Amino acid sequence: PPRPAVEPPAPQSPLHPILPQTAGHAQPWRRLLGSSRGLATVQAARAHGGPLLVITRDSRSAQQWEDELRSYAGLDGAVALLPFPDWERLPYDVFSPHQDILSQRLRTLSRLSGLQQGILLVSVTTLMHRLPPPEYLHAHSLMLDVGDRLDLTTFRQQLTQASYLAVTQVMTPGEYAVRGGLIDIFPMGSDVPYRVDLFDDRIESIRAFDPDTQRSGDKLKGVHLLPAREYPMTEEAIQRFRQAFRAAFEGDPQKTPLYCDVSQGVSPGGIEYYLPLFYAHTASLFDYLPAAPLCLMEAGVLESAQAFRQEAQERYERA
Image 1: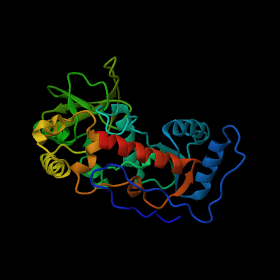
Image 2: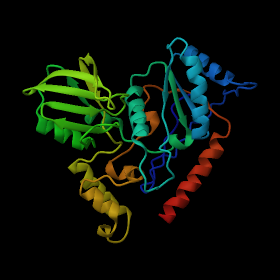
Image 3: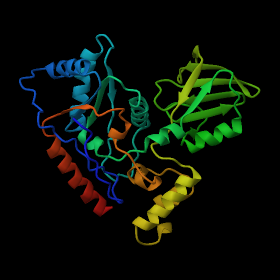
């Protein structure tokens, strides 16, 4: 089916009002017993020849469907499976998502533009959230290759702007540590951290290593660094946030801890729900796909979307 129409988002809400339009020729799948749903989905992805978007009614159903898909998609590895997890937070919570969740989300977004054939799995409540524009990932992604020159001061600034956190020992995605001529960094979207060894101002080697034992592994030719957050913390982005915040909310913003934290370059808990204030425009998950996907929607998707929108509006009014 063609790409669904997209309405402009309300300025005060990070929820995207899109829902895929059901084509007139769409037919429901019936009598799928046990894990046959997963098998049928993998077969559909192989036959379609393009991206396949699976939309579930909630995150629990998405996890069950993912388990089924991995059982069949992993048989030959021909079908890529890209889950796009939920933040696992209630709207306008004052807690940010876990770093592993953010890492998986950013990894999926970075792979979608080149997705020729595969399955993108997402719950409808996650699909309704606004996302950073695709150009944000390109602007804040870094490539480190062996032999490249690396100015440590500039590199630190780039990591800070990409929201990486300086620590003494890296343990989770989005952290880095500098010890003399060694840089340990755990890129978002990566399963392991990497150790960059500098000789003067050149990258002499890059190795994966175990954060628990600190033992290095095989040498790599290069590593791709994604931004550590779904929003920027550059001076320009902070200034845009401040202006948008003052325009959207009444009262003295200096009395709002969240506004003060962002003004000082600090990422407070729950800032993800204010994502539209960092950008001139935001995107939907459809904007990351290279072509209009074939959509599979689980029964109950529309009802779940309506209930979630009502819940989000009620929590927004209370907040």
